[in-house]
Image (cartoon, rainbow, N blue to C red; front, side, top):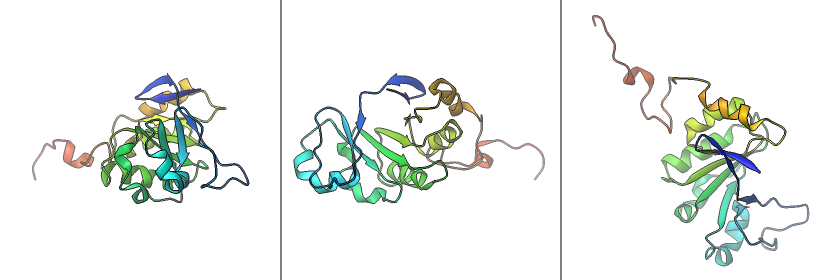
Length: 171
């Protein structure tokens, strides 16, 4: 599978573990290899998983970044799931991971990820995107450059536009 990572299309070496009906967070088998597990699985199996360097964590849209406060530095990848295009709660999770918990490694958007969202996700701190399988990844890559300027402050620029531009004329 391919993802967008650091503004280029790259091979994805990570797998995302999704629970099947009937699976429990305590009893689900976490396979070997680079695997991104649900936050609830990490919390339930932390003692067994914490020695593995090939574990990442993904957040559901109704979970809070603060749940990983003590462990955030352990992960080389954290993902946030967007269950549907219109669900924007993942933006807040990303912002909190970057700005409140100071997470600096790969932050990946997974789920219903479309071109129209990428510019805004990038502004919140995402640097990797698993675009929905039925969409053209090369086309989606162009979504990172849809706009040349942004007005608001965000994770990618702490100053709003009015503080970034020099104004001429009398005051």
